[in-house]
Image 1 (cartoon, one colour):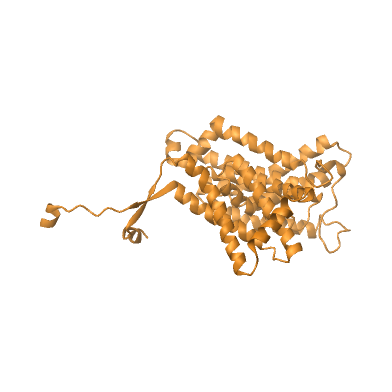
Image 2 (cartoon, rainbow, N blue to C red):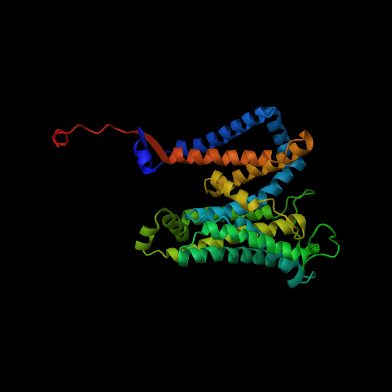
Length: 371
């Protein structure tokens, strides 16, 4: 690969400090190019892209119900996206947010149905479910973090494989010891007692979990900017060798950061079962933990950017459901647009952090010619 690059008439040169204008305009341009490309693909299939995008916009934001459903889908994307971003900031590739999301839901369900009695106050029940969900997610993320810190095992592989264990374990519970006798052909647990339901803001399904996500974003913003922990995360992520020379506990930070990441994903799982379904169901997540990776990257690992991106992708998901119902289009339209957005964002990231330089012809040397 290096020999091939050496033969090219240009080279990539890293930009030490990208300009502020590039950091702002590149994500906007990436989103526009993703939407334009998606429109061209729709046009090839015989669909009017303007009508499709209008239907998505109307379905997601055109009514109070659509907006509420967008906010409902935004909640787990926001929490899992923030969790993934914490790990990514330290160059830890936590691909296991889906499994941590499941374990958060499993922990919250255990507390609601088997640990506390229905007579407990919501002021006891909900914090206990939150703690159980965050502990479940954190412990599941501890495994790849510990393996990375002690053996150097790739957290990409270990966290990804652990997703399947978590999902299949949840299936075992739903088809076995936790299955409700009244679930019939739709495996699920008993419905949570009312004291275990997250409060809703209106007659629609927007619940307290959204406030959890916004509060976590504000806390992370302060941590990343104002605390030693946030500084160490950034330094270790940029140059772990220099961080070790400076006396920073890199191995311990790997484990801690992975557990924080998993805890936030677990809180997302808790909020989903306590705020929306009020029971643990099969396939209750349509892949929120995987979509969180897109959310974190498009949001540039910044809490405010992740809030905006989670809302955008939630709108795509809600609008995609409307496309299927109103226009008869496949549900894959929304994931296709998500993939295009990520593709162009990653390309824009390269263009922001690198510039192309033309290779200069080597200077003629009389001594070299004499040789």
